[in-house]
Length: 170
Image 1: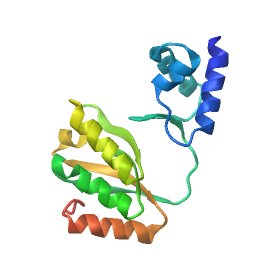
Image 2 (image 1 turned 180 degrees about the vertical axis):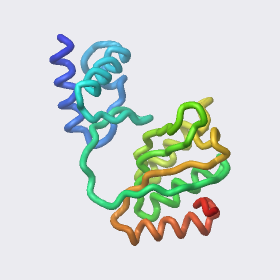
Image 3 (image 1 turned 120 degrees about the horizontal axis):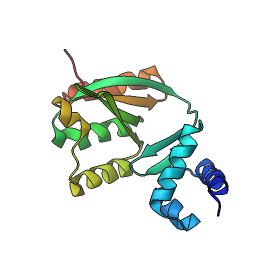
Image 4 (image 1 turned 180 degrees about the horizontal axis):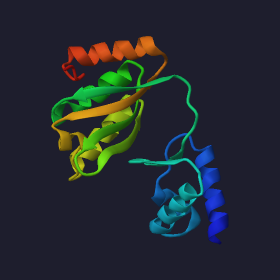
């Protein structure tokens, strides 16, 4: 299959997908290497398509309903599961994690975590990889973009994190 046609079909797969689609799954579908898919996605992004790369795969940026805001947190790495679970149990979705790096500036990791099973998948991946959390670069200090129903629900989430001594208060 020619590259242009494959990229058009990749977009169609992503439009129809309800969850992120891995590069490996796309590679299998189009009988090409994973690296070809990574290159195709890079070309699609360069041409203006809003494709998000998450740890679970690619997805199209969709206009979501709800209220989004950034919160500042600071905690030890062993409190990560507690933090993420607290947010999703109270109806929040963790869109990303952001740290301020002294050389690179702002570094953002796409998370898109909205359920306890996704929290567990993230924690299991973390435990079984040699990767470090972005927040370990900054002594645990980091931001999350949270999406929830409304401002009131955000305040409930922030209060719960404050009680757990996870929400940063200076």
